[in-house]
Length: 343
Image (cartoon, rainbow, N blue to C red; front, top):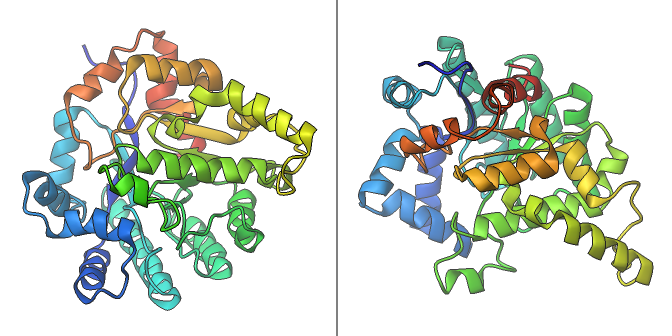
């Protein structure tokens, strides 16, 4: 029996050929020796394993191969995000140009298959003013559904006020900002690298969870109360920690322990419940999905596959079999995404 909902996958990676060529050039000439980038793309761009070859083949393909994979697994619609680390490893001028070009290419692909694709705008945090303009251009002129940032940019996080034009643009346009992971920065990566934990196995979650927490405790949502942020992988572990985050943040405030911690208008958990959405990308675990639905609310959790990095057809069935009501499955797979991304 066909499901009573559309399966909308909300964190599906893609890349332009120019972006992938840029990564290869950085690796070959050694001009960007960030250990996280070298670990991540030294593997995906140069390794000849079946997995690496599949990723390299599928990332730039928005044609029949990707559509066939969607059809074979029952994915009705994919929200496309420029793959990690996006344009954020390049110099300012290169990053600005690549972001603009990728958004133009994405709009063209969506225009050819609007029934199957939507997308989020890439931008270059290296120039926050231009980033805000590119988000606005992409939403208003290209019809993209929000913006995506691949977490830190050269070790800098968006809670720095110099990046506020990005938040201002998203709030003004009433579109979400998706914070997608990348490898930990130079400042934190070494212990992860030593045991092969820098990527999706753990480093991604630690780094992106940290990024979101920095945004919350710095008071960004008090300044931009309508801003909505989306994170994948079931909130990068933060929903599990809500009680402790509330307790320890309050304790730190009471003790006046850190000058950098500001009084907030709400609890950390309340920002997670009112300003943050999470997707199930790469985490088709029934207990984990249901925990997020319980602590964040049914309206705050959306389906994603994490294609092509995690392409396991059986995982779709696992999510279909969630022991929740038909109405809640409709929210999880379809209507939450339609509302958040204005699909």
